[in-house]
Image 1 (cartoon, rainbow, N blue to C red):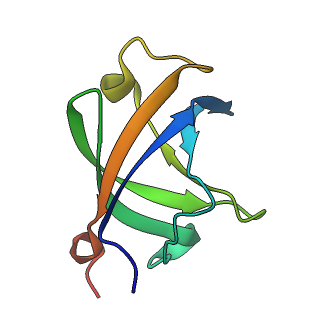
Image 2: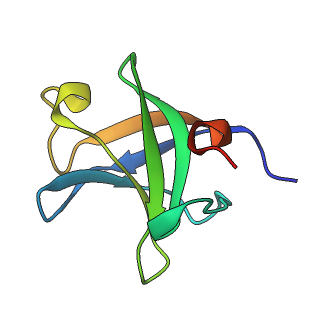
Length: 92
């Protein structure tokens, strides 16, 4: 059975125009929507937002940090991120 919430540390990376935090491979997720998206409620630096985890074609799962959430954090910064699954947000 999968956990409902996780906390992990990651180094921020740029992916096109996005700033993302890759999830450790030890975190097991289940994509439940189009484009491999999994709805979550996330927190970084005391800021909470609704977003999605997504898995790219190579199997790497990540979470994007929008500017309003990351503030002054940039590529290369180490962050601690917590999230919990929010499967009900996309409906069944």
